[in-house]
Structure formats: structure tokens, C-alpha cells
Image (cartoon, rainbow, N blue to C red; front, top):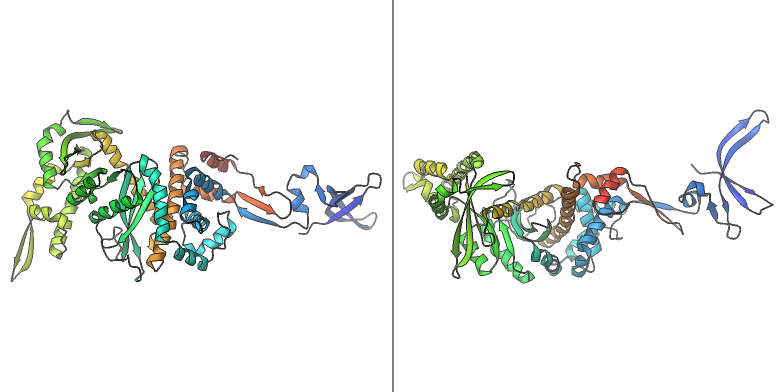
Amino acid sequence: VEMRVVYHHKKDTGVTYVYEVIEEYWDKEKKQMRNKQRCIGKLDPETGEFIPSKRLGPHAGPALDPAITATTTITGPRLILQQIDQDLGLSKVLKKACPDHWAEIMSLAWYIVNTGKALAHAGAWCAGHEAPSKQDLSSQRISDLLDAINEDQRQHFFKLWGKNIAEKDHLCYDITSISSYSEQNAYVRYGYNRDGEPLPQVNLALVFGQQTFLPVSYRVLPGSITDKKTLAYLLDSFDKLEYPRLHLVMDRGFYSQENIDHLLKKQQHFTLGVPTHLKWIREQIDTHRQTIDSHLGLRKFEDGHIYAHTVLLSLGENKRRAYLHLYFDAQRMTDDRMAFDQQILQYYEELTCGKTIDEHEEAYQQFFKVKRTPKRGLHVEYLPEAIDAARKKYVGFSAILTTKWKDAVQALAIYREKDVVEKAFDDLKNDLDMNRIRVQSSQRMQARLFIQFIALILLSRIRKTLREKLSNTGWTAKSILMELETLTTIHYSGQYQSLRSEATKKQRSILEAFNIQT
């Protein structure tokens, strides 16, 4: 509704006052239309500019001036993401690596953190939200951007970004599968899909800082490669990035003698889970069983207790000192027994289907009798006595091999915290729209992953703040960003200052947790 105003000029003072007509009515006595008015300001005697009444507040001028236009943007998410960016120095690093595209990359990362949706819809989101880039992020512009982000830029970023984290943190390493419908992507292969989906895939290897809760780097590997074969690729990439001496934390899926040799050759520290079905581990358990499962082995751990024993070892040609920590947890026996049975079934299927794995050869020989005859072909039999003996003697036991930690409890604590990588994979797939690769070419897939990686850095810091300052509030990363969607700014044309809406009590508590003054 257009505001109706009238002007009253006072001859004695020379001031022209501006009144708003707030109501019109019929005067029965005088039989004419009359109106009710309120004073909303005056005109500047020299310039004629409207000066609003102070009682109306600072927004009255632009709101009442017909010559002024206004636009509204959503401010709330920008306040948090910009603060995180400044705290981490993320844009500074990105600007050095991608000087021509850093703002667009960051804007798309902001969009992904907020929505978790496909990049095709980013333009509309960025148009209504405050974001680093002022570019119109149309679908064509995003496609051009994905073509422009090259390998040199990505490696330059990893070198600058990861070096500081690697110097002061334990690095956790793991792999996940990302499914794809593309047939034109050179990295896509059929292989063991960790999510159980019958789709071709790529493998994404991710390195994460255990204490900083920040992603350090990632590497894309062909979908057909096994976990054990990826470590050599990772160590070579660390050499190229000139990272300092590292401490890698990995689960037992990465254990192999070849990987141990690689780590020793590169002189890297490691804390690595070791499968208990290995013959040499079972020999160590048998040797130290009485010490482990006694009052001598009982150790306090977190909110309970665990049995543990440490064996000093010398590894490799240079006889490098290492510690084999053996653990027994009676409460885990039931779960371990079921896991053991499932493992035996898996071995059986591998043998009967003819899809054996070299690393399982020792288990095949220990638990099965394999015959091949001209008439019956392949015949696989269980060895029940060997299976029962292993089931009774070794369930509940676990082992960690480390070059870093002398104390068994400390090593276990460090090892169990490696799940920060698994949580990061969950974020990528569930919250950051990475469960499917929708781009076709290898080049665009690599660029898409890089933008996801930037988004993961931001999301990881949000989660860290939630854990440390808002742990009992029920807030999630998505819910706090949604809560801040109503925090907006009105931008006026001309000389009037922008006006931000007042933050609610909930919004103020969120912003204060991120050290943002309201």
C-alpha cells in the first residue's frame, strides 16, 4: 500500500513538516471527508531532503523516502562461516592456490555446508544469501569453474593447508567408496563397494587431523584398488607435498608387511591395528596370555577397565623400536565371536567363488580343507576343530602396533579416536551431497571433490564448536544454520546505511559460541 503524505509549511519558522495520512473518514456534522495525520519528519530547508522523526528509529528515512530502493539478503550463515574462515585462514590459503576462482569456490562450499544439495541449485541460493563471490553462479558458470580448477592448484592448496596441521597433529587415514553412474570417468571401476551398492565407484582416501578435527588432504584412487595398496600412494604424495615427519593412525584393514616396510622406509611414525588371526599375533597372545588376563594386566580405561600387555619389538633392517600392545576385553567377546563367525563365512565364500585374496591365504590354510578333483571340481570343507579353537582362544583379543606410544592405554585412546575420519566420510555422504558423483569427466569430478573438501573443513570446525560449547543443547550443524536463516540485512540505495534485523536469544547464543559479537 502506497503511503499518502501531506506537507504543512509553518511561516513563522520556515519549516515544512511531513505528515502521514493514517486514516480517512466521513465527518457527518461537516458533511465532508476528513483524515487523521501523524508527523513523521520534516524537510531540510536547504536541500529539501526528508529528515525522519527520531522517534521512528534509524530505518524510517529509507523506508519513507519514495526515491529509495531496498534489497534484503540473508546474513546469518555468513556470520558463522566467515568467522570460521578468518579463524582458520582458509580463504588466504585458497587465494594463493586459486587466485582467480577462490571466491566462487568458497561460495559453493558455503552453499554445500548450508544445503547439502547439488551444485546446480547454488546460483539461486547465493543470490539470496551473503557469500564471498558476487558472480552469478549459473549452471554454465559452475561447469566452467569445474573445468578451470586444475591439479596444480589443488596440490598447491594441500601443500600450504596441510603442512601446519601435519606438524602438530596425529593424522588419521581411511578410505571410502563413492558410487557413480558415469561411464566416462577414468577413476570409476567396479570393486569392493563399502556401502554394498552394485555400482561402479571411485575410492576416496582422506587424511584427517585427530586433535584439530580438520581435514588435511585427500586422494582419489581407482575404485578397484584395495585398502592395503593405497598407503604407498599416500606416502608418495606426502613426499611431494613436503609434509614433515608424520604420525599416521590407521585401522587393521591397512595392515600388511608391505605397508609396514613402506612406513619404516619413509621413517614415519604409525599406530596401526593388527588382525588377531595372524599367526605371529596369536603366538604373542599365547606367550603372554597369563599376564594379560590377570591382575597384572588390568588397566583403567575411560569409564571402565581393560586388560593389556606390551611387547617391545625391533622392526625392519634398521631394527626400529616398536611396541605391540595386546588387549583383552571380556565385554567385547560376544561381538568379536559374531565378527569371527562372519569372517569365516566370508573366507568360505571367497574360496568357493574362486575370488581369493592373497592376504587371507594364511586363514584359508588354517580353517579350510580345499580339494579339486576332475569329477567334483572344487570342494571346500571347514576344519571345525581349528575354527573352534581359534574361536575360544582369541575372541575378545585385539592388537595395536605403534612406533610412537609406549603405554598401552595411551595407544588405545589415540587409536580409537581415529573415527574422526569415519565421521568425516559420513558428513561427505550424508550432509554434503557426495553419496553419488553426478559429474561425468575425471577433471570435473576432481574439481567437485575439491569443493566438497573445502566444505568439509568448514563443517568440521562447526562440529568441533558444537562439541566444545553447545554439547548439551541439541543443536546440529544444519539446525544452527537454519536457525540463522531469519537473520537478514536490508540494503538501501543512496546514502542510507544497511540495517540488520535484531538477533533472537537463540541466535545470540549460537553466535556467541563462535565468538561473534552481536
